[in-house]
Length: 360
Length: 250
Image (cartoon, rainbow over all chains, first blue to last red):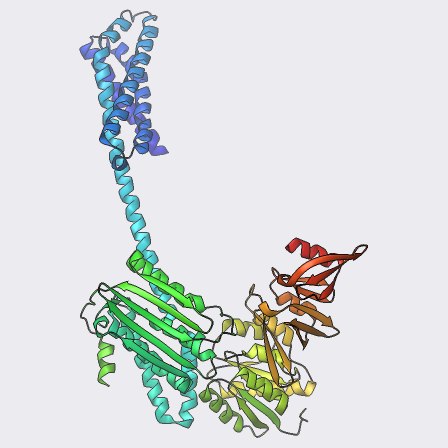
């Protein structure tokens, strides 16, 4: 608000100088008369020029035809300058009534054509400045929005990572290790290695923007190996993966949380367990991924079940916009999540953890 | 009930074989405890409770078919129950509010001994488990009951909320009517009313809760007294307040 007042006064003084100079130098008016007319006219036109922002905002350059812009602002310029001149002429007549200012009205009228041209030009200059300022503001706003979008995407990423290293999973794994230490020390040691490998790999992959589907599936395999120790034969896995899909890029930890849901809310809730089906298909420009698990039809869906899925949706949205979809098909005794993504080749970078795990 | 000198008879319930084995091993170190059974799911736990009549049950929360809280609801409240859980903030809060013992996985032998001591004291005092309070605290806020569990000897009936016709109070029990059958359960009618979806179940009378989907019509049979007629022809008394509540919902 303060800067607007300063702008108003500055423009008013500038215009006052212009008007006074024209009257004194071109019209031969005495300087007192020129200044006394120039000041009020400067104030009035400063207000008009600043108010020109509103018609500019109402007719944005990008969405208005050139003819309409020229028409709108041309007419506004002529009207503003005309009104300004009428005010000036009235003021000059009032001034003339005072002693010592004889001929002020005549001198002003003689300069009317000049003032009309000056009024129109100054108005159009103001319009140009307003459009420039509006464009700068729009650019800054777009930048802020862009930053916000990036922040949101990052947050979704972090939430996904937090959700992925699930404390239940860690505590249960530690419990299995604790049980194995006395029963089968070798198995306990193997389980420690599996858990360390899984954590190392998920940290390495999670810090990257995109990974190859091959690496994500390796992480899923690590995870399932741990759950197989815990649940024994209750967790079974069937995997059908197109060779051509393996090199495609996916966001890291896209499938692992969904497979974890399939274990936790699916087969772990079944006495006899069940088979988790993981499929990946390459369809020309897209890849189609699916995780399917059986579930207990008698059991109400539990809280937290939707969280992993919401994370996946958020991440897909922020990374691919409308180019990726995640859909859920929930039957009475089965649950299936399908994801389709654009098929892009993954960068060739190899994850150190992955190589070590494969070599072992 | 075990006398203070005799050994405590314990049942272990966990769906993971490794977790059961670990607990069994720890319990075997305690000569005052005899492990009489172990179960891999909630139904088996309910059966074991009724057939083996243990003094003590160590039970996991997350299990197939029935969870630990549901099992507690179905067994004799005189059995001292110690919950064993990996990590569930919600459940842990329920335990802390209701002074019930719980162990976190992996189980610390020291904490297990403490829990066993407290279980002995609970048995010695003849203090029953706070079943209703615990079940209410353990349920997530604002989530209505999805199914009613009723025990019939060692058997458990699972009645989905959709399948409930009406519930009738009978002294300390409720009779749960579903599809022409009725199941008796020890629970105050107000307690089950509080857990049902208030958008579908209405207390139409001091002794009756009705599933509004089952209502066919309301009949006036004497001055100021009405009956609710269900689709299957059952007639239930409707109190004045009950009629008001029913009208408000419809």
